[in-house]
Length: 384
Image 1 (cartoon, one colour):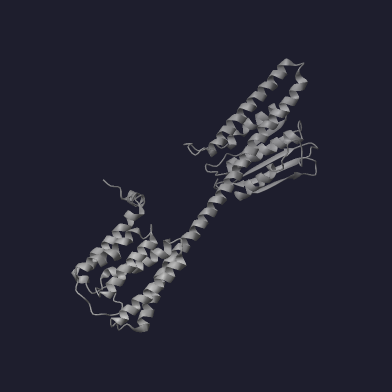
Image 2 (cartoon, one colour):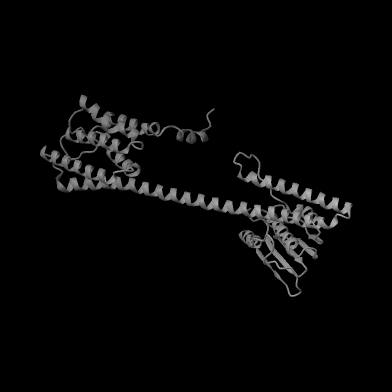
């Protein structure tokens, strides 16, 4: 059985000439129906003439060019205009005369070049047709010819309006695509910053500590093992991030979960940072982007603690509420978070933007007791 839902898609895949041909054939068939004779356009109001052999050529000139009305709109309009002129001069008054309005709308919508020239030539041809009809005894009069000309202008105007509407829609889609592309680049840059900064910072701190452990082989081996594990985790996270750029990737890119915070805290402890981690409540079934945002807040805060207050006591508190997740990371010590080796200044700003997009609140600053506190309130259920 044929799935009717696939018919529109299959039809759009056909060439445009094939898709426009049915309109031309239907109009041509309607023109030879006996009941519709003398019910077509009658410009000049000349006495009707019975159909003869030339009528077939006139109908063909008026109808068949509609098959190329979108591919070659100028050619279509020219042929249909010739057929329409013969139709009126011979007083056949066929239904095929309606093709002129369709050709005008198509030209107004799809003609790309020499639009003004086409309008001038078309107007001149219409004046010549009106004069010829008047000489044959037409009773239309100037008012009648002028009214019909305004109707032709209206048909062209409808096509021009459709053309302008398509151009506006295309520009809107282009703008949306550029905005989405910029947002995606910003998101990937933020993820890359979070991953590289944290892992590399931990490796640098561990490598610095290894210099002073040459006399303690066991501790040196533990430190070097931690550096190796950190490097492997960095490579794994980078591979998952690069999946975002792979259009052939069939699975969803991996995003960190709140449950991985224990591994993140353990990694930071291996780098020599004393971290206390507490968690209240349980994550909601649907957290949206809140889960990733909470992970990134803790990751960035621990990275800054390693860089600017290495060895200082750090406390991580995570609270899962019914409608929001609260994260607070406090680091003791006098280290400066405003700068440091390798600091780009984009980490905290990126977190503020990430949390703000989800409708939450973010703050980072030094308290009166000298500790540096990062606090984030993230609504759950927000779209990621």
